Length: 169
Image 1 (spheres, one colour):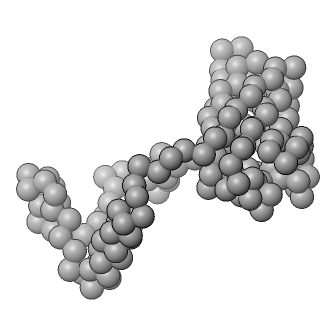
Image 2 (cartoon, helix red, strand yellow):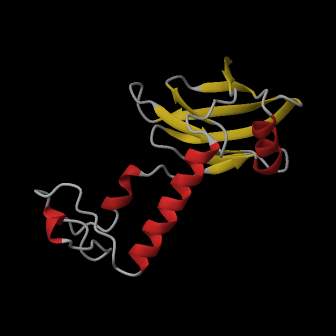
């Protein structure tokens, strides 16, 4: 069994409260302008959008493949939490992946991953573990059981994990 320890320590914000308030105010103004078709997104005068064309679902892609725009987004596969069952799915490299949650203390938890039936000896599986407070990308090369321990000393991380667990993408 492979074991990893991940420290999910709180990260200091790079913005103070006034800067955050200004950002939210600016975003609110931008959303209002977009709703009223008054937002000028012409950041680069030489860009294709210099004519203030508004891109929509029907004209934003050059391809006829309707899934092309979503290829950059991670695919949600399940949640590991104290209230969830073992989650299983087939990945890109492993035909059988299971994920189980285990609370180890008030400030830590483990995710036990079991990866079986590897498609090729040279492939790897990347899984993003995330919620609003924690994000961690793990790459799995080896078939078998892997234990990932998340240490979370901050109150925000503990609250988020107790509320919704951690998601796998």
